[in-house]
Length: 237
Ligand SMILES: Nc1ncnc2c1ncn2[C@@H]1O[C@H](COP(=O)(O)OP(=O)(O)O)[C@@H](O)[C@H]1O
Ligand SMILES: [Mg+2]
Image (cartoon, rainbow, N blue to C red; front, side):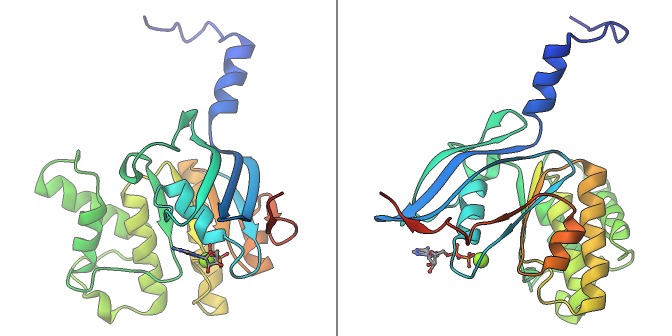
């Protein structure tokens, strides 16, 4: 049945859809043995970024592993992760459509920049020409038009960070997890790459979670800030 576009949705249904959209961390708790590593409960709206701060070892990367679907079996986790109303918690990583960006670009050294992006491009986009065009467009979007054939080893730090972002975005993630992705860049470059990342998050209306130690990153992210250092890490009763 096709909905008549001029008949407004009942308010409750519209509110329900709005509520479902984004990334929901519902009573997520992660422990290792008897020790509770962290507890977090919250929702990230599409296009906005939640910043998670906390000392080294407090479990930030572990939280990301849980959300993305590759938590090490040394940990136990409870609670649920929902993305746009769909529960991710029991899905394999490749079905979650969660993109990750790390401190290091982690490009395949034996592939060109373009080949790295082709590798991440969804398989449903068919045809060599169409696939190359999609990669060229993505490279242009991060200011690296004409870098398709570059060897990753010849890139500057800022260029590598842009390629890493392009490779993450070309996979069309429905949520983004940013694990200290700017911390290796110097001040000036950091501001540029950061703006690029948060602009893309807003334009694509993807919910994102950022881990950082830098208050300037949190400010640029412009969203809620959670400190898991305070009371997050304590022994379970
Ligand atoms: N695969 C693993 N197996 C066992 N312990 C781990 C593993 N990965 C991390 N840890 C431990 O879990 C804690 C949280 O690590 P991590 O999530 O990497 O912290 P953060 O990212 O906040 O610095 C640390 O004590 C770390 O040593
Ligand atoms: Mg970490």
